[in-house]
Length: 303
Image (cartoon, rainbow, N blue to C red; front, side, top):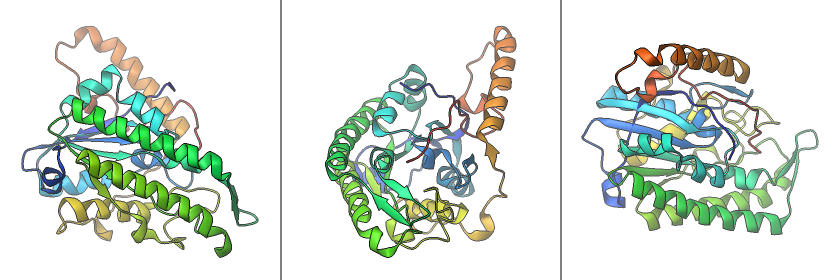
């Protein structure tokens, strides 16, 4: 499994069962975000900043008591296989045991890594047989992910995030084929979530096929702040419809390059080793780094 390094803020946990998951959690929130680069907050310029999980955490803190929020199980490039492996590690088991709210972003990399995007020509291409196989694997892995979460976090409310059309800059004649495959992925995620008693969060209507204002880089599939805001608000449509992240509530941009995050994580790790002998109390995930972002060791493309 790919090695990955983590940074965390303060957290979450989920109730199991569809009825429970749709109800607002009254206890202090322990929020854990797992998944790919969208959960980590990757920007269209290959940096890490506030993503939809950070905005969800921010809005939760405005309205509820939040004990901790962690995105140390989110990593750019993760497929459903990677996500499944990541939540089975010792660190993940300890973290998930305390969660009562969980969001999951997984599945897009299984599909999008097979799509060839030519931003100059505005064209997309893929092999249908490869896509069919990848979507079937994503279905099986997502079933395993949700079963694992039900076992490790039996009292957690789990929300499975859907995906948007990631190529608004290509020619209109090129959108239909790939759009249908993303629709298939969303259908798989929705069916799998509902079967497991989780809640599926649809985000595609918030973007549409021409969301160039939310996905501004023709050569990159990641959203900007407006896109992440739309994803966070889609979550609150399911969690507590009266809540939303308003424009004036968006945090000031503070993007960090992968290299900056790696350097800070190394420094934090070194300082942690030096003081470990003096520490007598258990370390919380939010104590591990001052960056509040996912630390990366290698640059993994989203597609």
